[in-house]
Length: 259
Image 1: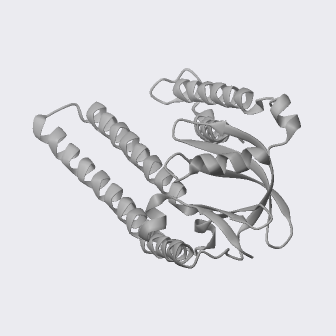
Image 2 (image 1 turned 135 degrees about the vertical axis):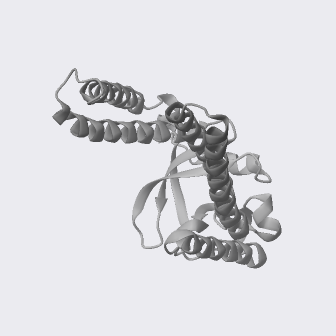
């Protein structure tokens, strides 16, 4: 099948360093967290600060920094891994190169999978062929604009023939991203553009957040140090609070991605 145009990030189009960047980023974040924890604990002991309060603040601060760095690294990985193809007959295909990698366990397995993704991206940039694993975008349900990218919810036909609902990402740094956006908008249904779908995830997010706050309050009152409620409900409510928190994060991510 003849390829008319390929859209991929500028880094992947030149000579992809996806594997080196992702593996190095994970290793760097891990090393930074260990260094900050060790240095912070030594500083707390040396200055004679209240251990419980200082260590809690250190844990929260390091965790927040690690999450922020991991999100930034993941966003970079998503931008470099997505490739779009326009073939003869104006058929539009999409490929997430990460889905073809087979990562193992641990940091070494992750690095091996990232290097496989890097090799595939380099092959696409050099050969300019349509991979057999690419899926054809049949219809675009909606396009949600975010600060650095657009989340595109669409119907994709897999190579085996099954049609699935997928979320693709179009970042502003992709060369000729406006042309790709135009191709995606051509496949957006007229009904969806007339009446946007109801945002159900917002209500689910609020309910999950309220449930998490309620279970957290029961945990605090049932803690042995407080003793206002029976201590037997502490661990069940702690597990329920964690489950509600995970649900709230899931709905927040889905809403941010426009799913």
